[in-house]
Image (tube, rainbow, N blue to C red; front, side, top):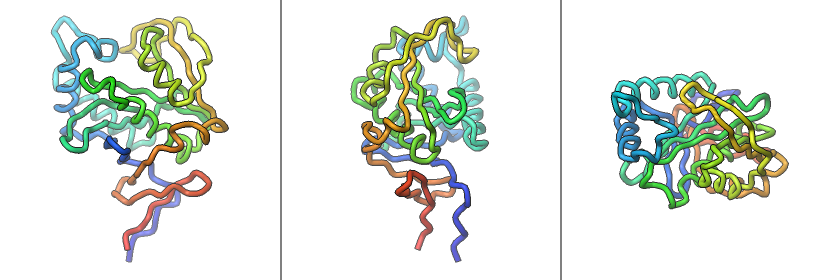
Length: 225
């Protein structure tokens, strides 16, 4: 007899879009993460600033992967590694962050240099926006970016987010550089007409059961026959 589905749906641990595989990070991803960051050079300097000793060592990436997995398992911030399905190459990361406040989540991401300009950032951000509104039932999604990050601002507008304004003198995490941020938001009333709502998306829970999107926006685990 199959085990009963959980009363509270598990967050998706694995997501599949038309071109990408998004999943919770695993220990072996530390090596993939270092390769993605090191090969990107100055492109990711704002996310992974160099130190006098040089680029982040593998031990630092491994420690951060452990944190990402811990936060995910505890239903805190959910960070997905974004992979090329055919090769397993790490293209970047995309996260649902809880610092946006009650009934809201923030989408954050980074993408390796040689994966830019192909629509991957839009596709992976769209996937977690869909999850946030249809599973987490949020009222609002935020996307914040540096005023000079024209690519991220373009992604926000492409996904139907509205520019709300410029937040002055902000620092959201210890490793961030203090400065101004552009704030974009998408409301639950706007989501049904957004590109994210139309994204083909497959999702699986912690034990690999497919999650089906319910008619009212929730999800349920589909038991194997």
